[in-house]
Image (tube, rainbow, N blue to C red; front, side):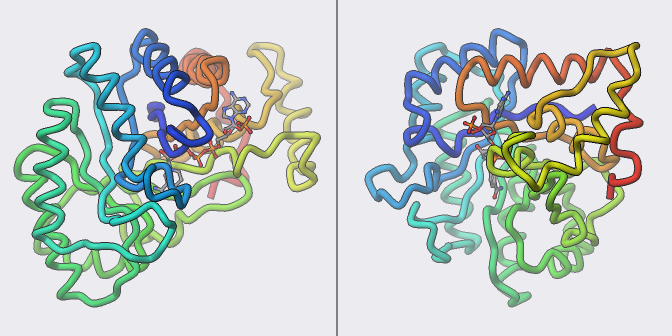
Length: 279
Ligand SMILES: NC(=O)c1ccc[n+]([C@@H]2O[C@H](COP(=O)([O-])OP(=O)(O)OC[C@H]3O[C@@H](n4cnc5c(N)ncnc54)[C@H](OP(=O)(O)O)[C@@H]3O)[C@@H](O)[C@H]2O)c1
């Protein structure tokens, strides 16, 4: 079943460091271990904040001597200005891999290209050499924000890498089709499940959900689904190719509600909810 991954995109920006530490404490105490970060978090266009989210994460790891996290490190950015400037050469990526291994040791799990707008096969092959090296050493290679997944898939005939793929997926919008060459395996990781923090009742785009929820909630053999964060998790959870789901709580209270809902999904059957709209 898809597992939750705690996101860090707002750490050091909308989420201050003490709250990020509280989120990590609560996640860890609840038995969950997966974290997602990127070199350019927070992408707030403040140069001094470049790499701030990963620094907060490192401080927490070092303070507690943690060795069993599963961190996804998304790499390739050279600033946090939301610019298209990226560096995905084999040499730069191997340098990043070494740096993250030094920094996080056994906590590093997935090494992921984060945005690739190129369509030159030779350049993409160079990137894949670095991902293949990471794979050989036991880390999982990953892709996110890829303009040409078809080229990656074609080149992968030579590499045979088992990619994890982060993609936007919510009930209003999904990039699943864009990654068609990789369909059919549990390798996908959803982000944007809350469609930017949309709330039922406050966002007219979600009005179509009301009759769906009313009908599904007629069943009395399970707790009802009432909130959009639950819809977001459930919609991703029911996707057959979903391996994990990114959660971006802005408080410990939200985190605990998210984790409680994951537990609820293990205990109750909600598979009837989104059957017609799953794809
Ligand atoms: N690979 C990529 O390109 C990419 C892109 C985006 C994100 N990500 C990753 O995904 C992580 C999550 O980001 P996202 O964009 O996917 O976030 P999201 O889940 O779409 O939205 C997060 C927002 O949802 C609301 N929310 C979450 N739990 C809630 C709850 N229990 N009750 C009420 N509201 C709740 C909060 O809004 P309020 O604060 O307004 O209440 C929160 O700020 C990021 O931190 C990052 O690690 C990756």
